Image (cartoon, rainbow, N blue to C red; front, side, top):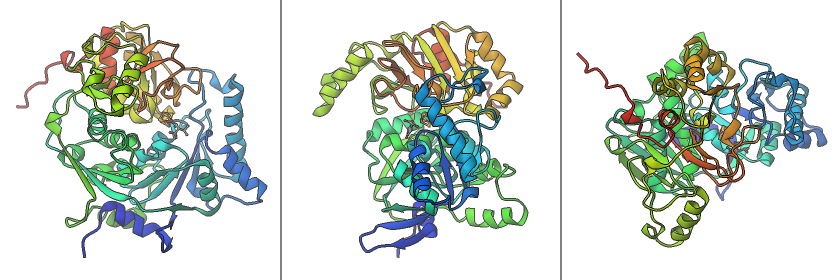
Amino acid sequence: MTGKTLYDKIWDAHLVDCAEDGTSLLYIDRHLVHEVTSPQAFEGLRMSGRTVRKPGNTIAVPDHNVPTTEGREAGIENEESRIQVEALDRNAREFGIHYYPVSDVRQGIVHIIGPEQGWTLPGMTVVCGDSHTATHGAFGALAHGIGTSEVEHVLATQTLIQTKSKNMKVEITGKLAPGVTAKDITLSVIGHTGTAGGTGYVIEYCGEAIRALSMEGRMTVCNMAIEGGARAGLIAPDETTFAYVRGRPHAPKGAQWEAALAWWKTLQSDEDAHWDKVVTLKGEDIAPVVTWGTSPEDVLPITANVPDPSDFTGGKVGAARRSLDYMGLEPGQKLSDIEIDTVFIGSCTNGRIEDLRAAARILEGKKIKVKRAMVVPGSGLVRAQAEEEGLADIFRQAGFEWRMAGCSMCLAMNPDQLAPGERCAATSNRNFEGRQGRGGRTHLMSPAMAAAAAVTGHLTDVRELMQPQAEPA
Ligand SMILES: CC(C)[C@H](C(=O)O)[C@@H](O)C(=O)O
Ligand code: SF4
């Protein structure tokens, strides 16, 4: 008998039933809810006279539609947005689930506050009506993004119908060079596999370069598993994970902590586990990257040039031509010559404290050369910590707007939007047409790279701005 992968282990531990055709019923430990994909689900419960099966394991927060300017408690102007947030307010109170309203300092992007509050723990099944639920896989939790009808199903039953995916291993060997971050890893993997490379798989990220990442970095990597087509992303829990989780408000305490820890330590893929697909990248080969097109797979090292559509084959020729047309770029142009109008630092990919620190390190003592730049911390607590550490002052002095927590310009469901043709260096995860506002042009990159673009006014190799590191004694 072959061994099990981490995915197999969590799956088996939550399997309630499996039909002959493979249709399975999984028990769900945590259900995270936001205002966009939940109104009809709660309405469905109401209409059928049902309640939430496990209100104590269900956590709601408004994030996509919330304004990020101060005084936002006064209300939301846009009617559609206001209706969604008001519905969540009402549903959370009526169904008695945990709730973090905008007035609560713990409010933030759902995928940031789950881990922050200790709701996300190793070995759990976590679901949310949101594709970037993959983020929680950084803890060695099996985290599925689900649709609104599934949200209703989980609310009512605390279970989810799934068929099992195949196992894919993505190994990043060796060490990252200075200036290279988790975002560069995850974008480079998608550049390598394509946005469909993970279709039908759950990815486990492993290897020395992954082990060396902080929890923040691991969340950045897993966040984008979905952009590579995978059902979920996972990283086996280790001492870094346990240290992050310990003491969080909803993490187990005392004897329960000890018992949980003993189980968590078994959550690794066995040596002889079977992998249906394996991808290996060398950490040393990964460069700071940026996207040039309208898909996350359109990614290149910052030292490269804009590609020529004729470099591609098949359907990609036309896709590249359309991308370049939309992005207003010429083949052969140096990526580092592309001028930027706006910088957006935030999102569930890169809106955590370490991301803000990395950007602030580049910005310290400098001024922005772009038309506008904003930092949108991923949660109220990230914002408070950044203020305490003096990062907010660095951002403000550089000319950045210092905002309240939410999804913001990651997808422009609130007033934070690009104008047609406006070009943005963004730390988020999707560069689709119109993603940040109709006609807006998005280049994805790491927080340090976004900060570098802010101070030079064009896409920039962050390594040119880094202080030389002192040699260790
Ligand atoms: C609005 C929501 C359903 C959507 C998602 O599922 O990912 C959003 O969070 C996004 O990033 O596009
Ligand atoms: S920050 Fe962006 S990617 Fe993340 S949940 Fe919000 S809209 Fe989706």
